[in-house]
View 1 (cartoon, rainbow, N blue to C red):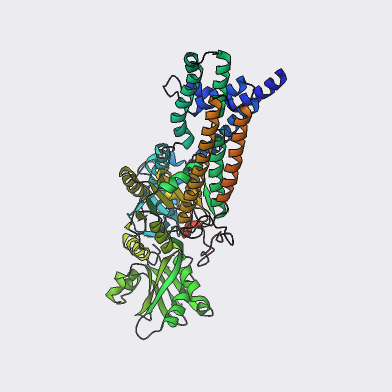
View 2: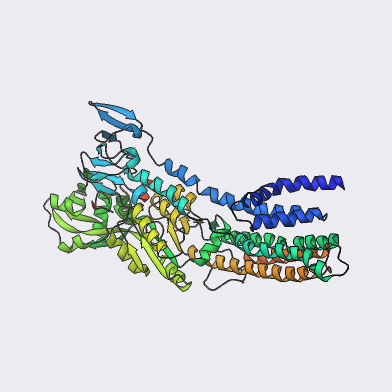
Amino acid sequence: GYVRLLWYGVAFLLVGWKVIRSAVQSIPSGNIFNEFLLMSIATLGAFAIGEYPEGVAVMLFYTVGELFQDAAVNRAKRSIRALLEIQATEVTVIRNGQTVVLDPKEVVVGDTIEVKPGEKVALDGTLAKGPASFNTAALTGESVPQTKQTGEVVLAGMVNLESLIQVAVTANYKDTKLAKILAMVQDAVGRKAKTQQFITKFAKVYTPIVVLLAVLLVVVPYFVVDDYVFRNWLYRALVFLVISCPCALVISIPLGYFGGIGAASKAGILFKGSNFLDLMRELDTVVMDKTGTLTQGVFAVQQVQPAAGLDAPRLLRLVGALETKSTHPIAKAVVLHAGAAASGVTVDQVEEIAGHGLRGKVDGRDVLAGNTKLLTKFSVAYPTEVDQVLDSIVVAAVDGKYAGYLTVADSPKEDAARTVQELRADGITKIVMLSGDKDSITQRVAKELGIDEAHGGLLPEDKARYVQEYKDAGRKLAFVGDGVNDAPVVALADVGIAMGGLGSDATIETADVVIQTDHPSKIATARRIARATHRVVWQNIWLAFIVKGIVLALGAGGLATMWEAVFADVGVALLAILNAVRIQRMDYSTPGTGGTPPAAPAVLPLKANLSVVEPMPRELREGPHHHNGQSA
């Protein structure tokens, strides 16, 4: 007997010591009746009456559930390390006519730094000599590079795309936009309240009631029973406490949530904690980024508009052939669209005019391809309506005459419009799009997809401000994004959702939910899984309550021993397991479903719809073209 007690005692301390310590430490603060006290009293009571396995099992299940929750919370902290990798660790400074490599923290305002092609700008400043093109993905998340002229502002985190440049530093390292993004992520993670688990809320009510009833079970019979024996009634009270310990709940609730998380993973959705399943069900607002979230994040030619006297294939052949001499993302999109038409064409005397476009001989004809500034530079007249085109545009001239234009834009994902419809049908009352792209383009995409509200031309702090305003207004919201610039807002939202296939590592690590297939319609699928999980969990809770209530009544009357109590707990736990397994067998592919086994797995292929201009590195994909010259 002593060996058995010692054996189970060691096991109990290994899994239960932290719970008992938490129960004791919470007493001075006044937080007495919590789940820690409930677990401690019930399990120590089980030991007092010799039911050692019951005491150990309750602590074990509870502790394992807590470990899963802690692991999910700790993931968010890794996002900060991911963001730190984006910051430049060294910078070339020009001092006294000499170049010296320094830590960015050692550079002072007024210094001039040198940035080679492909390098990140380490500090905020102004372009000393322009023009120059930059990938701005780290700050705006947009797919069109920006062209900057002499004297214009250049920010840390931008990537220099073309030529060696110099930047006059205007802000210290700690005051750069990129440093502020990092600070915003840290601040947002700190402000994000950890949702209270059901067992915690339940224990605040259940524990004092059970403890009081156990005390009354010992005291009251003294006044109403003739042959009162203290030891017998104390034993009944301890049995009552052991029966009252919600072992079935401790088992069935995590099982239900793990079933929901498993069902979500089959659908290509990763939940980083069971509390996010609850929050996903409670949402009334969904805020989304544009590029890479609702749109494909890649360029494609949308329209070929030739001038009078020239057909579209001929225009595409001439422009496509000339653009083969450029490495710019928009040029690649034009070449891809032109296909075989641009091959076998003689192209020579090509000249790239920075910030304007290309000039060259194509099949012996003088061809210009670029933005409207290029045509103005060479005194080529063009129709005024060309200036009204919203998309990135490649304007062409042949032999000194206007020849037409091509529009290049980022297309909405195939399921983007369906996503908006399903979310609205699913009870989401407000759908918002926030983007770093031009407001005119943002509004057009929003109108095309049926989105309620849209704002463009935003930096990360602007997005965070909008999200905070919605939260202050009492809205439960999710933010969906993919770029580094989205990481602070993802951390701030009640539920942060990242696009896992294309998303930046920082955003994926910061997010609470990751959509691995990059299909926005999975947001609605995640909502359906969350609701089904909630329904099954509450079925298990009510089942445990009903059975527990019956056995408690029998135990108080001395009609139930520990055998009945254990049998009731094991039986309820088994039924809860079978019920939780159902979650993974339901079909969540269409609105209103839940309960029908799917005919086939509903996982869409990873990185679908990305063949337009691949291969393209994230630095180019996320970052206005030298043809365009306008701010994204």
